[in-house]
Image 1 (cartoon, helix red, strand yellow):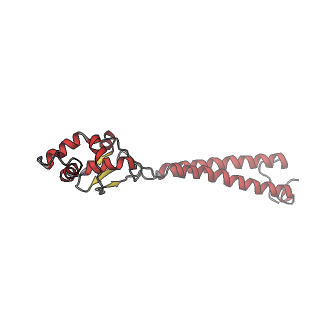
Image 2: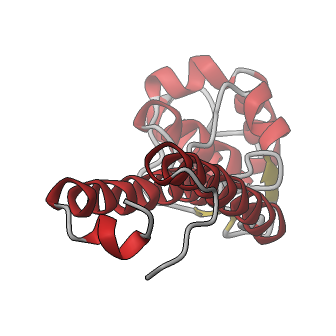
Image 3: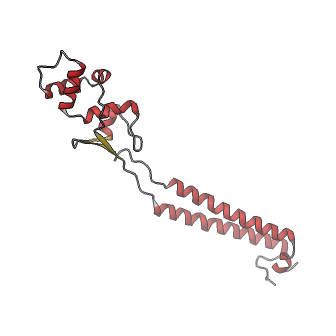
Length: 184
């Protein structure tokens, strides 16, 4: 055997070519797919915040000091009442406090009651629940890093192509005695 066309007549060579191209495809696609997944947009907890209906914005630092953590676009059920409390107006807190403690706060103003309840938030929330949703979560995501994804993908494709071309040339050298054999 001296040419590629003579090799093409052999069944084992044709099978080897099929396996070669399937392997080449897999070795290129899997790393590029991994780069695609790793560069996906992600939830940015430091930039996301809760916006209350009264205009107050609670960033992740403020929320974490109160024991509330944002997870993507939701707040865990256990923390939801705390966020409602943080977003509640003085009059809403005073109304709930007057219902929870009917004899204790009838003579005080809404602002005074609210400041007392805010100072004793955990104790207040054990006895009271704010039922209306008075906030919305603003989720911020980092964008896909297209430049690095495309750059790494290009490096992977070129590297794999060079490696497979070297394997092909070594194969030709072993079976045909030449690195660049003639086709016919």
